[in-house]
Length: 112
Length: 440
Image 1 (cartoon, rainbow over the protein chains, first blue to last red):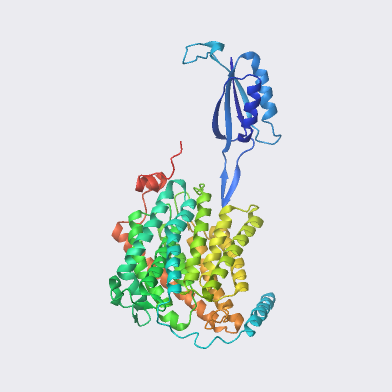
Image 2 (tube, rainbow over the protein chains, first blue to last red):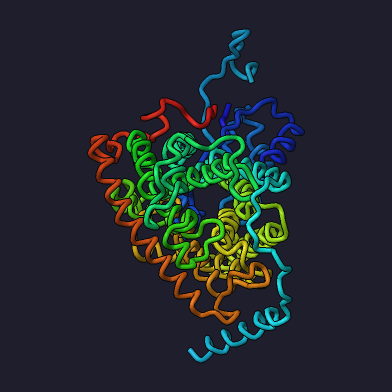
């Protein structure tokens, strides 16, 4: 099992989610996140007072899937979350030791 | 300089030609009528309610939205409490100090303490004196509330309450008397239709003095201080605009053509200034902000206030255009160059644009609107001098008297400013024990 963490632009969430549903991803966790990478922040000016806003709103997706699905999931995110401009986000892939469904106690890929 | 002269000559020609077509006013138009007029009375009662709304709704939202999320409720509290204090002080001793029998052109006598001697049959012109007193009460209340725009985020609530009582009594009432209560400025012929001097220059200068005495907010100029909600501010500006029709057209104290004209020029100036500020900002900062449009509207309303019953439509367009650009320049460029911390720009918007409005009244007052008022462009250069003198006198008196009021307040309340911890924590929680928003 692997966990795919993807930081994407908020307005791309619906497209990504729909496409992942289509290939059979059964669940995901989404968090409203803030951060910066190469895009850095932007400036806001209120009556001449200039403020640097470093952290930009993003969506963080966490998806745990069995190993054979990882490539497909990454491909979908790459395709659907891409706008071609700076600030599209990143994908991280992490190993997952175990997964347990709380209601039934099932574990492993049965729990996904 | 040469260009300026050409522009002045041109304006004189354009505006002057309008004046030349003027017909004589109907005979008896200026006679004092001392019977009650139900139309006038109904309108001024309505106008009073409109102006009332400007403080606890319009100004509270306008200022609250600009203050930081942790101080939004404190800004509301100071604004609403100002209205309460203004209401109570006014009916007890404020009205008589401002509009009681004149004592040497300086102050009103105490004959009407607690509204003594004013009954249901007393008249001021064609309306009941009770209505006149109530209408004026809403002005006293909003003027002190305007001051707090300079000092949000850092003043003790107790100090603000004491300041408000003393300031209405010792600063607002005398100036209202000078300009509107048969005082020396009125005798001198200063034109202030609805409160350029009394309300805006007065509040703006007082705000600046209070901001300078209190000092800057912790982190000013170093950390970002985001407005809590521009949406609230925009809604507040809209409510101020709506209420301002009562403020300016109501100041005619009659339901007639001059009131209608005041309504027309008020709306025009506000709209023009909203566009002007927005465009100035768009050109200068590459963004037309909502805060800019809202600020411009208020700047245009402030500037037309002293002129509302005197200027024609062209005058209003120019007053609004200049107010928008000048207001933007005052708060977005000048303030940052000088470096004082006028939190929400009470001085930049009300003081500066109020002064522009008072000057503009001396330039554009058109005797076709009110035949007793004639500005420079209609052949009366003396009026401009009178206007300048009234601005300087108001600013000077306000600065000195406000400083004294601040010092006395500080003694009474053991300091003016909240502690460092409270300021960082935010005044909503530190003072009121509440939060403006519950966000889960």
